[in-house]
Amino acid sequence: MFLTLAFPAIDPVLIQLGPFAIRWYSLAYMAGLILGWLLMRKLAMRTGGVVTRDHTDDFLTWATVGVILGGRLGYVLFYKFGFYLENPASIFAVWQGGMSFHGGFTGVVVATILFTRKHKIPLLLFADLLACAAPIGLFFGRIANFINGELFGRASDAPWAVIFPNGGPYPRHPSQLYEAALEGLVLFVILMMLTRLPRVTSRPGILTGVFMAGYGIARAIVEMFRQPDAHIGLLSGGSTMGQMLSIPMILVGVGFILYAMRHGSPAKKT
Image (cartoon, rainbow, N blue to C red; front, side):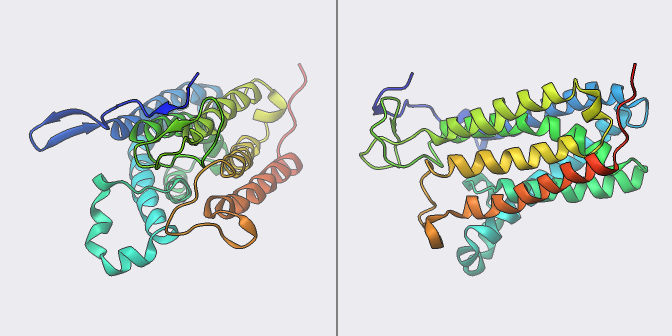
């Protein structure tokens, strides 16, 4: 358990070889993508050949591009648009940080739509496989945020609060670990349990909806402990940008669940 102590000295750069650096954040993205891909390959075997391992192998590249481009573009548009409007060259300085989950999610959605159309794969069926893998990337990404000492929480007197290097003298909630637990571990366990229920897997779209709504709810909860971005602050009513962006995900997620339950094929009795 964390005590109210200074943040442990963890170098964000794991290995430095001249100008070449391997950062924990990069490794987190790689771990999320690779482990998610392996899980999708395993789940694809349950689709009766509709989605093959070759499909999941090909999609890894599409997902990587979608995450990086969408995540960066989302951060530019949603969080620091004014700054990047005045400094457009900084948009490409991804090594300085600045990625948005909601942007990365949108990028993967676009990549998924294009990929499934190209390969004539049922969109919702493929999206369900992807939804089950997504919490893995979220888990590792939030752990990397903690190692980097970024996106920390609000000041707190909790016994597990941490004094972050860039967070001033006050101990703060390790909100990155809260997100890793809720958006990563808890959501992953829920989705894996649902994959064991034929009445869920026979209705494509339910798992996608559970992921979207689950992430939105988890993010909205953690935002109550996370320090708002200094250049944005709190919005009207005391909400944060993260909460505002999560509302559409919750609503669309619930919509997917309701649609799938009405239009999906019921599980066959055995």
